[in-house]
Amino acid sequence: MREKRQKAKRITKMTMMSKAAVIGGGFAGAECAKQLSKRGISVDLFEMKPKRFSPAHKSENLCELVCSNSFKAIRTESASGLLKAEMKMLGSVAVECAEKTAVPAGGALAVDRELFSSLVTKIIGEDENINVIRREITEIPSGFDAVIIAAGPLVSDALAKSIIKLTGNSFLSFFDAAAPVIEADSIDMSKAFRQSRYDRGGSDDYINCPMNKEEYEAFYSELVNAEIAELHEFDKKHVYEGCMPIEVMAKRGADTIRFGPLKPVGLRDPYTGHRPWAVLQLRKENNSGTMYNLVGFQTNLKFSEQKRVFSMIPALREAQFVRYGVMHRNTFLDSPVILNGDFSMKTHPEIFFAGQITGVEGYMESAAAGIAAGINAAKRINGENTVIFPPETIIGALSRFISDKSVSDFQPMGASFGLLPPLSEKIRDKKERYSALAKRSLDVMERFISEQL
Ligand SMILES: Cc1cc2nc3c(=O)[nH]c(=O)nc-3n(C[C@H](O)[C@H](O)[C@H](O)COP(=O)(O)OP(=O)(O)OC[C@H]3O[C@@H](n4cnc5c(N)ncnc54)[C@H](O)[C@@H]3O)c2cc1C
Image 1: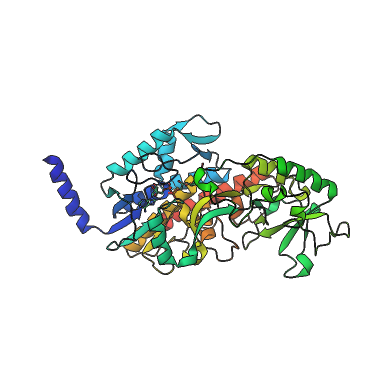
Image 2: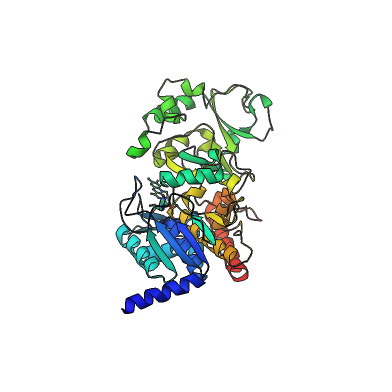
């Protein structure tokens, strides 16, 4: 009887409140719902589990870890540690639950996955402004003051179709075949040169990393013998359609990649005056030129093997990898065309996207996108201006990356110092530089929270 009265009271209260729909109870959805609730918005959080599971989800709980149980480094002098510190300042439910369910993992924040997801589910379930509804959403719902789509990289097919209808046919990628990205600062420019093939285009467009015959042969032999990452069954079907990994192409013959991504034609090495034996080209990943991608090097090698083998290219001996190459199913929007930096749609300001579907990559990055989208959806509902987080913060840098139209061939991105604007003074020592970047970010975030949120 008492329970019935309480439920009726809750329903009466909810009818008077503004209402948001959050689709997907994963990392982004849980954070988003919590931020909306904190700002007095009533939330219907739709989660299709346990009625329907994606090929990777197994548990009924919200915020399920589909693979590793690690949220990466804790120290704020690392990009992933800094991201978590920023999220904590914003009241992240994922960081709070991770700290409470942590297992020993050296310098990383790893969790007992069952305890972690159960705790998130409990906190969200007990929130009186959040109504968790276990149902698959197949059409973008109407009748809400805002809708936030946080259905993840394995969004159900029916909803994916609805999103395509909403955004336009070509705006959803179903497969991620990405080449690695490295920090510009870590390229050894004494062993590389800037030049476009046949001097077409700007002279600054490409950085060329030459190899002589011996260097190429050593690289080639390690590449064809390197360890491959295991693929999920549902990924195997897609992998080689249209986008061949560099290691697979290499296995076709000793010179195949020298006539493909490593072709030296149209280039002259200024150090030798000759055409190199083979050349890896690096292309700017962002407008500011702080990151470069390895052109044509989409790969399915294990991350450790990518570092070991690609670092054999002389100019990349000390390369810092911002993102490793991946090949897996990953549904994400062409966000620079579709989204604003506040995670709302350019064409429908009351519809937001959050999480990995926006092109951020990783558990905590997805959760962070959920925080930003939740704050902004609440602002929009409350008639306030939305905000874009400052570029000096990792959350701000990711928000800007996913909405940056200058990014060529948009591919998902995780937390990285390479995304942040450089410091005003150059600090050569990497540890000191990262520490200064982290301090700047946390100071800026503190000011931003007190002035804008
Ligand atoms: C196979 C795989 C392995 C990964 N491994 C890692 C890793 O080890 N480390 C890491 O940092 N990142 C990893 N990622 C990337 C990413 O961080 C996670 O996918 C992360 O969970 C994304 O968070 P999200 O909130 O965007 O989506 P999710 O956490 O996937 O949440 C989306 C939720 O939406 C629900 N949903 C989907 N469609 C509908 C619908 N139509 N109606 C209602 N609910 C719906 C799903 O059931 C799910 O619960 C992996 C991704 C994949 C696909």
